[in-house]
Amino acid sequence: MKIYFITYGCKVNQAEAQKWEKFLTSNGYNFTNNPEEAELWVINTCAVTKKAEIQSRRIINKAKKLGKRAFVTGCYVELCKFENNSENLKFFSNSEKDNIFKDFKNLNKNETLKISRHRAIVKIQDGCNQYCSYCIVPYLRGKPRSYSIEQILEEIKDYQSIGIKEVILSGINIGLYGIDYENNINLNRLLKVILKKTSGIRIRLSSIEINHIDDEFLEVISDRRICKHLHIPLQHGSDRILQLMNRSYNVSLYEDTIEKIFKLYPDISIGTDVIVGFPSETEEDFKTTLRLIEKTGFSYLHVFPYSKRPFTKASKISENISETTKRDRANALIELGKIKKEKYIKKFIGSTLEVLIENEKNGFFSGTSENYIKCLIDNKKKPLILGDILKVRVYSTDGQYAFTTVINDQ
Image (tube, rainbow, N blue to C red):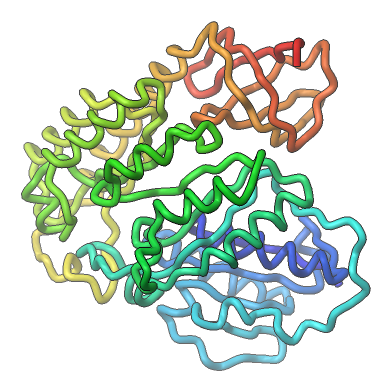
């Protein structure tokens, strides 16, 4: 059977898809990038924004139109409460995700297990209890639930056994890891155990909230195996808007923590999320956000126009911002993000980076450095292998990519 994966949304969805792919590959199933030839589509949907909801609905309708057999799960399924399975379409709630392939008939186990990516995403927890006023996720994913340290170690070692050299620890809110356990289990402890009980493999963290970063965490990430790259959502630069968003920090705390991180790790990559056009956002609120981002050493920005979501408190605020204003404000931040990314990459011209080789096209290789710089690699002297981590030297940038050459004494 040939299977085609369609995954929308967050790294948690991506982690789930990789886990399913690994399981099915080990049981003899094949995968294809051609949706037409696939005998089964596995669709992992998203509903965090209106755009994601539309994408999810369209792909389900496309499966129906083409008469494709499909397993459909994810937050859009949870939102719409699909219950009417048909001959071709079967819907799974988020709580059923881990059992989605329970009834698959085991085939002869493959001797060689591979996955389609060279960085594996490991889901360490699910759910959130923060209830930010704009966010639908807690209503669709439920309360925080953590995977055991033993389960996470087993998955990391499983990926390492098939040649994976970097794993990304992901979750809906990874700073809540262990909140549902006793005995002081938390993210810091998890990281310490991973570092102690594995070797060689590089560890990257997905998004982490500013209020979950403490001195112990900053000490733990000093280990060279943990990528010097943090994604720390800001969401807004106005304390008034942050309060309306029900965020659990103010601008002062955010700035102080970021400053502390840069003092310890001057070259670290810090990216952030920003929402524009939140209900009642004034021009001055936006300019305050713009000024804060301009003076902070972010290496990249993810910019989101506010999207009204059902169930959320923000959806009941009547002072809505026009779509034109949202678009203009988003574009201004996107352009600022490009400037900040270029400035960050330029810091490393003449420096050495360790890059995971991820893609090859027409003899050109590309990959991601430990500090999350996308690198294009000059490959005139040394044959490269996808999935390897190599030292390269940066010699130029086009603003979005670093142009690098392989260091030959390795």
